[in-house]
Length: 253
Image 1 (tube, helix red, strand yellow):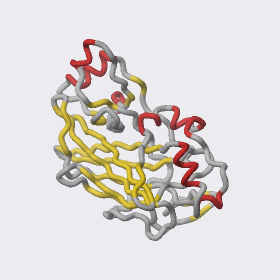
Image 2 (cartoon, helix red, strand yellow):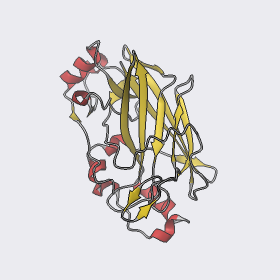
Image 3 (cartoon, helix red, strand yellow):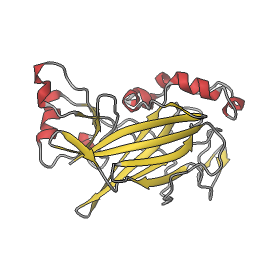
């Protein structure tokens, strides 16, 4: 499952980073803040990449936002056009509040981006996707754990979901896509959020996840994660009976 996922891009040199941010027509995605994660516009593969800010006196020449890797959408994306914040549809699992903070990057600074469409989709506690066919399931016509929100005036899009389950061949993850329209052209960025192994182990020891056993793939064993997933690692915090995570991404124009 998800066998066609693969990491896109490479690490840029410092000269390339400066050239990208200095160019008036370069388009990419960037994460704002020292602990943020993000990606790059999939329509422009030449700049789809992972970047680590260099140290030294020349750091002042770089903006405060860092480009991160994009990942392919995998076989289970369906453009359901479901405008909703609560995507659970009564699916059992540990509650997860997922908030995207989307920004635009200009002149080395980040400002909230309003009206960006953020889609999310992921498997349930049993490792099953909705509205899909697979050798182990057929859920055509069902639409659980899918939906989109448009960012508000503060650049935020929030979803009520559950902690994702696992299935063979992949580490624990949530797919997401960000779509923007400007000048009559639409750009989209697609990637995946990953979760700390220790937290997944804790969640999977509880119902309804526990009935699946302990055969889930750790991050270090997932070729998608090892190709850049450490830069897309979500950091949930305890929130009531579940968790909440805030994820920052900026779109540079």
